[in-house]
Image (cartoon, rainbow, N blue to C red; front, side, top):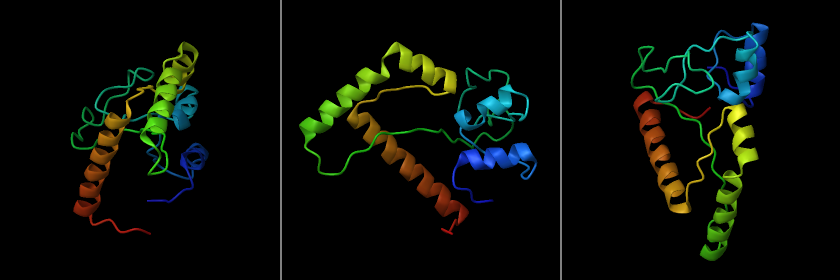
Amino acid sequence: HVPYRGGAPSVTDLVAGNLDLVISNLPECLPQVQGGRLRALAVTDTTRHRLLPEVPTVAEAGMPDLRITSWTAIQAPAGLPEALVERIAAAIRRAAAEPVLVQKAGELGFSLIGADVAQSGRFVAAEVARYAQVVAAANIRPE
């Protein structure tokens, strides 16, 4: 494990030959893969990625229990009035449905979901619980 301050510096070091392997978000490494400077070995999601259909999933590559899905959520302070939360969430869902944004996000490797507040909360809680189990099982300690 080599700690980095983000994915881009680790991808830069991988291209330079300073690292042997990086697990990175697709938008950080896609241009390097498409340009032939990096080789994608597997995707950590449950299905192959539409931009790299020839790259197997980690399950297909022999690691069926490994699943790391990259996601981004827009957060707000706790205690924000519910009406304001819903108004902001509705605006975000409208923006996420705009064709130009959907197209640009897709070109970068993102899939815009636009989940509602309750769905997002359940998803984040499930991810926190899942990673807590991984950390406990591997006896991982903060550095």
